Image 1: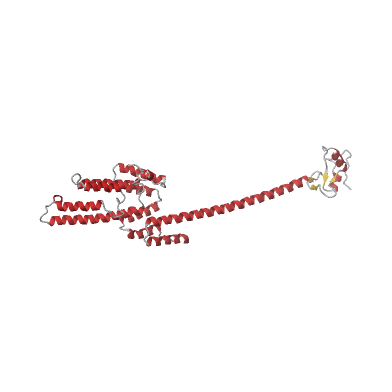
Image 2: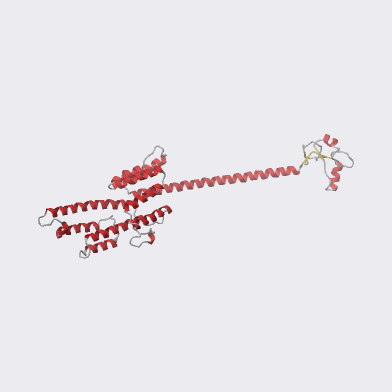
Length: 353
């Protein structure tokens, strides 16, 4: 057996496997009930045969009662009741019915063996069929299960191995809860009995639950109590959780967008202020000079109404030649006392009058 993608399966089984959680449990419940009925019927037939003076000691040697046993198995293997493991397996039912109709060619043991093989094949298809939305981990599990089927391992071994792999992927506390849940489901008898199991596992109220979380659990507790199937309730839970996460994601993206816009506006405003400040500094630098008197670093405003204090001759020379340096002063005192750095040939100082 190989793990097969659902889309690559024959059309007769492509839409059957893998079975849903509810369908597996429903078919298992029905098989268990049908088996009890079969055993009861077979017991009654054997008892009737043993008590009849016309019958031999062996049912197999009694045509009448052996025929009743064959009919009981035929009803069991080919039941037309819904939600049996073979309900949608048309080819299986045709093949087994043909065997019942040919008692000279096929014995009851032959039919038992054929049914066992068909049932095992159905279980393998259920456990190993790959769905389009399967994760890589689930696909790996299904491939391993297919290999175990090929090795002739029992269905119990294969399922236990699958459960073990699933639990190993969970934190220890979650794995313990999951295992207890699966055991409780396995031991349950009927959908009504499983309602409390589902509520305890999926909807148990905790002291740490937020108001929203508590309301979420209460909502789906009521759905379980109303008798809605596991698949329907869990599907609704997943849908609501996904929508809530999408809404939260959308809200976060909206807030992030607002923050980005605010940051962008802040940066633009900051850049504008820095540009204004830079221009002001540039203007001030262009229209301000330091006092030329040695040791004095006071600024001299070059844009005063009467003009800055400077050597009149140096001013006249600088106007005639751009290479001539100008000497500005913050006060008359500094202008009168500066005889060191000035390049004026007259060595005189004056200020505009």
